[in-house]
Image 1 (cartoon, rainbow, N blue to C red):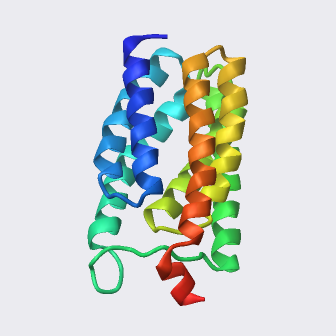
Image 2 (image 1 turned 180 degrees about the horizontal axis):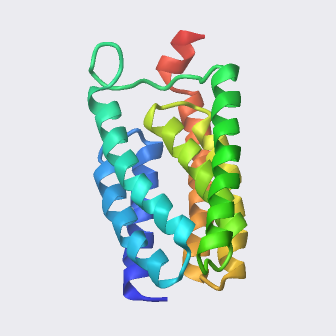
Image 3 (image 1 turned 90 degrees about the horizontal axis):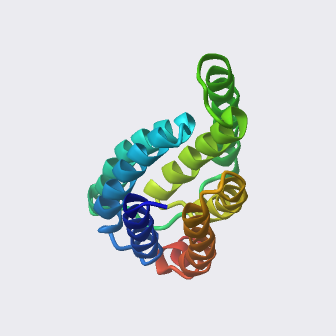
Length: 189
């Protein structure tokens, strides 16, 4: 455990806590967190997760824009449900991404856990994409992905990061409960 991991983990908790509360400051704080984790994953030779953090950096900027200027009236996104066809499409893209990235990492790098790391990376991108668009289903996918990350980081002896993902799991459950009560979601039903 390093001071950098401790700072990144703390910023991660703050960022997700703000996301649950639909506070757009979650995005710039999250951007700092993912940049710190980019460095850490390089040191740990978790290259799929390093790539994930680089893509998360771009999604942090996209999410900040969506939450503050997105939507039909450019006044920020509201919580909404993704239709079943969109869920199927995005989960299929996640599966394809996991297979391609896993193959590349297993074949061309010294990644310590290429297939699982790739799968968690691909589905994290799907969940983050949904979160940037304020799709309620992001929280269900985050709960599943975060639980897998807890086990993954315990197995790789990255205990503080495993603790961070355990906290993320609890925050994802809280996000699911809170966003389901959002007036925009109830008004759309």
